[in-house]
Image (tube, rainbow, N blue to C red; front, side):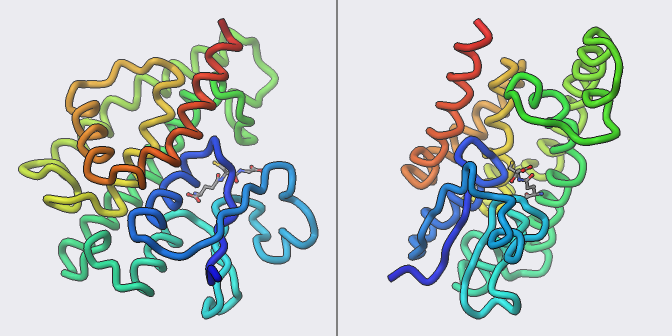
Length: 230
Ligand SMILES: N[C@@H](CCC(=O)N[C@@H](CS)C(=O)NCC(=O)O)C(=O)O
């Protein structure tokens, strides 16, 4: 019987990264799709942030944990998955830096650029949720899309300089986090530099079904929203 439960939403890349890791590591886990089942008193008792992914496992101080990168770091620490989260302090710092950069700096831009196409709600206080015209909202969305080129280049120039992956010769949890996230840019037919396509291809090839099976949910959702916008 699985000792860990991962509560997920299938079209989400924040969820996808953890779904890739548990498969790549061959961990025993139960995956629960919580579409329409969040925001209940039971869910909020475990996850007051009301966000997915959510990991439940005995041994966690509160029995539950949210935030995709924290979940991946915890699982790697607990199961000694050094190949995905190196123990050398310098290599580990590279992995952490790439993940924090993604979550703190890149994801907010990417969400502003892609969420309208994906049909996802945006955050209070942003242009997209303000009482302004659609033209102004589109202008702000385009600004976010344009602004992505700089952090993408920073990522390539630093983390992939002389290596195939942040993790060196094989993908780390930072690579899973980055590749999963970049999938959303297909919703806006983002003009990827060739290195990005090559990087994503390398990750999928290295991880095989562990990547291809869960990413099909995200790609399927993107195909669906594109077919609706036709
Ligand atoms: N930084 C968080 C983001 C989590 C997040 O935004 N999760 C979204 C799915 S992409 C969610 O559960 N949204 C549900 C909601 O807003 O009700 C992580 O990486 O886990």
